[in-house]
Length: 226
Image (tube, rainbow, N blue to C red; front, side, top):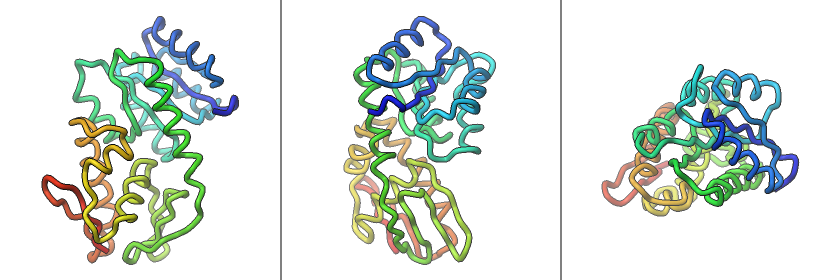
C-alpha cells in the first residue's frame, strides 16, 4: 500500500487503539486516531482519510451515528466496523448503515490488515469508465452511479460491487455462496444477512424500470432479470 494512504481509526479503548494504530503504521499507513465519535468526525472533516476503521460503541457519538453522517457526505469511502463479539446484532445493522466490512473483537491484526488491503484494492481497481445498460438504467461501476432519464442515483461501494456481480451474470442464477465469498470473503450468517440488506436497497433503487427484477431463488441465490 502507498505510504500516502490515510486511515481514520476510532476506538475508545485506548490500549487497543494504540496497538492497532502502531501496527498499521508499521505497514506503511498513516493513521489518525480518535477516542470518541465527535473527535472522529472532526478528524474526518479536516484530514479527509481514505478508509475508516470504527468501533461501534463509542462515547459522545456511536459508530452507527457517525457512519450515517459521513455517508451523507461520502458514499464511496470504505468503512470497517469493529464490534464486540457479544453484539452480533451490530453486524447486520452496521451493514445497513453503510459499512463495507466488519471485524468482531477480539481480532488479529493480520486479519484487519487483509480486510483493509482488500477494500483499498477494490477501490483502486475499479477504474474502468465503461457504462453499461441495465434495462433503462445506465450503470457506471467505477463512479458507483446509476442514471435514469437524466436523474443520477449514487450507490455505495458495496451496492456497486453487488450490482456489478449480478450484472456479470444477468438473466442467470448467481449463487449466494459465490457472491458472499467474492465480496464479503466468507458465507457466514452475518454476511448473508448483510447481503440481503443490500439486495433490498438495490431493488428500491431499480424500481423506476418495472421490467428489472432481482429475483430471489430461495436457497440458491439471485437472478438479475433485465
